[in-house]
Length: 265
Image (tube, rainbow, N blue to C red; front, side, top):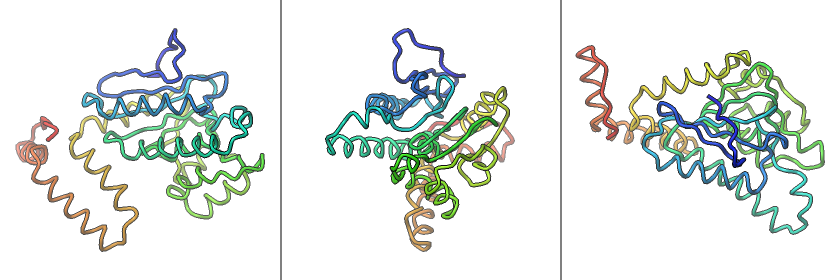
């Protein structure tokens, strides 16, 4: 499932199969650190996927020994202009928002380490499957840099005390702990990681693309609302969904005990 090395050494490799687009971070010697160029390449890949109706699910993976080691500290330290750092973190934030706003669900496939902005990337993805050797940390505090932007994603996935403990200590947690905290969905042996990711992706691909896209958009939008507003918004979304061709087809297929044929409208 992981894309083969590209002779051009592109920073992000894309492989499409059966409605699943796998985007593989391709800086293995740098543990897939998110340089400015890497962020730009991943942003471009996600923008292309968003406009591709043949893609039903996106998987983000990492080539080499790690999933993603966060920002490129050497690049950051080499730049002394505060405007560069401000633009870099804004670029990273925009990337995380793109993942949330993408019509297709995004699954993180994690092996090895996911640290700092790499851990943020995991938290920003809609779903996450990790191997049992994966480890997670927001370790900026260890070099005097509080991981403020990763904290945005962590605080929206983990309990407050679990998120703050990770942010304040910079210590690693293992995959079972990450699952218990709510950072990831599933933990499997490394040799079963691709199968587990594919099984999850395939389950989504079998559903109505319209309902998936509408549901994902509504899910994130209602999180910032009060309870009454959220229910009103959700009710409107369900009524709209109910009047779609896919919903009519799905209900008719259920009654007739046959497989639905999704139209995507």
